[in-house]
Image (cartoon, rainbow, N blue to C red):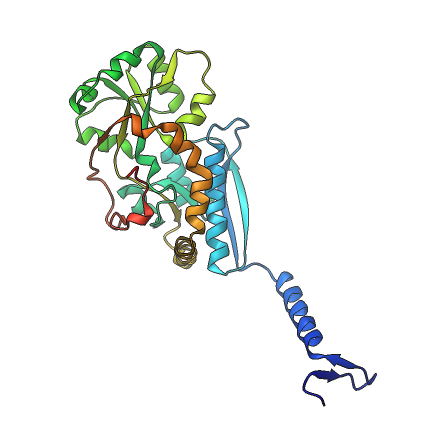
Length: 302
């Protein structure tokens, strides 16, 4: 038989070798397509129609998809709808196995309950904070020229947020509540003076504010190192390894940064950090293993 052909013994027809290879490849793809995916990954999404952080939620899903694609494993993603809930309940839902992957602001407690994939998916932007203030207070904040003056004002913060102990450790004057809506209403009611939000949160929330009673301060940014990770159940180390492998490959080939820049470039530009007084504080509550030494994983204006 000619080396460049394959013969059908029944018909006598000679098949070119490239056609045979193409047929085998097509049959292989068909067989693969009919197989169940190796990983079915459930993840939470919020049911709220006008969720102010929808683009961030979409980005997290895109990061999950990118990680799985880069891992080379077959998979399907399944959304688990839920109402907007507190951070503590989100942790409990993860521990109860309501979903396979969740995105959470890390803390020592959370890392004791679930297994983190220690790649900060927002490159640390969760720790870059701007402030909601009352519309008539911009001059007050524009005149702040040292951190101690900022600490003397009343700062609104969630009771169960990982940021809260960080700020207490630096002796900020904190007023606690259970939700961002409550804190915004307390700001309006003069029960606190400013409400810090990360730059990936604040513009979406500003869009849903009406009138000029609450605005975004234009003068100050407060920055501390902290991370938002993908988490899985502690027993699911295999999935954790797959996700870590995929994320590392995406970082190495530039696709992770491309997705990050596509999503957050406008958000970062809108903050105008070059015009702001930036106050940096440390975070003694960072869990052991936080990859602070890997500079490529973190955003910085420098």
